Image (cartoon, rainbow over all chains, first blue to last red; front, side, top):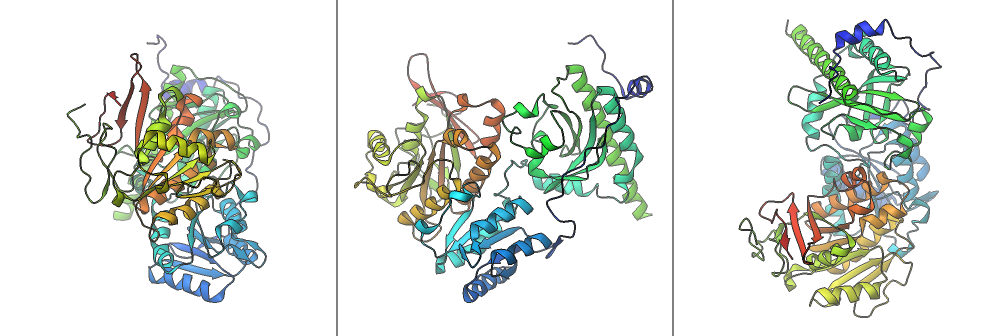
Length: 337
Length: 228
């Protein structure tokens, strides 16, 4: 056991006045957001499905089949129309034919994976298997059905299965994902992001760890939203691009000493663009233990964290978790009064 | 053999049974297993035995083989099971001919293991060889996940492929058997890419030279090292 006592948050407050912060450079901003800010959902209740097929009769049959099953399909006839729809609307799943007037269904899938990374993608076609060219889209990954009566019958079940279990995500989901999102929903209270408390905590953490960045992030269904971010100006990042997506699965504080040498994140261009090299994060937990987000410190150079530093980070996370819970309760009580 | 499970137990109507000589009980439809172990413990051979249909009414098997040509896959199959190769379909990744072995039930190929979109489509194609409609019984294997990781640029793409694949296996009541060699990868990569599977069968070579297995993630299966 270490002989060094764990620093309390009070210690940190005292130290903050002593530490000289590193010169503040221009705040790193996120590259142009891939999902346009004006995107809208077709429906909050129904699963939104984009159906792409140049054959009017086939497209109508697909739309009708999905609609009859309680899903919310939208039909378009080309790659261009699909791209336009994907730019303006959030779809849970794309069902596309292969041959389209201005490209292929795999072009549509590539766009969908860029704009809505978590969307399910189904190639639904009567084109013979051997005429489907996958060389340019080897990493698209789709479910595949043929336009037979049996597959038309099966299509709604497949789409429902994909969107309910979210089996096309490129990252693991916690076993308690549904409960976790429900717990996170209780923190969706007005004014949370403008609360000074979290800004103070992240600033203190940045000073305490001599780290360039510190943030409080909530890991939502499809993106991580930052309640407070010291040293940068980030609002949200798609979930598949964040380290926190993986860190919420771990029991302990997660430390990645060099992101550029990590087998999972070495190909993550966004982290490199933001100038991130090292990561340390502790989970924000709801009262029942669900991991709703992370308290993190990051730096622009590789670094290690001692056991004491990891424990200190855990304390910061515990404090932020309590603040979240407190504000959630205050909001509920305010409504009740 | 542990008393906690019954090896070779009769499968109910919603289970896949295994070779009675294996110390494994049946597993539920839709289950995906990862068989983990070093090459010397031959996890691929165990996977083939799990894929081998025990009776005629248990359908056929489909193997995505990332490393071998189809003829070599058939040789491996006939070395571990009496089930005719006519009940096996193979997707190979060597860019060869669709089917280059006469005794094989069906064959298809992609140019290389990194063509994950092609692998998924060829799987759909061959699955139809052995099933009636999209929900027929089928044992599906992939040998190996480690090769996919070597050929693909990033772990997340392989994860999406495995996540999608096991999701389809679950929704169609098939059986999935995936081969993985953790020793070839770091702990974090191994932990991430095995997340989509329902259970793991670890194999090893014991000090006496015997192969042993143990299961994690499933009830009524041997959880301690048990001779194969």
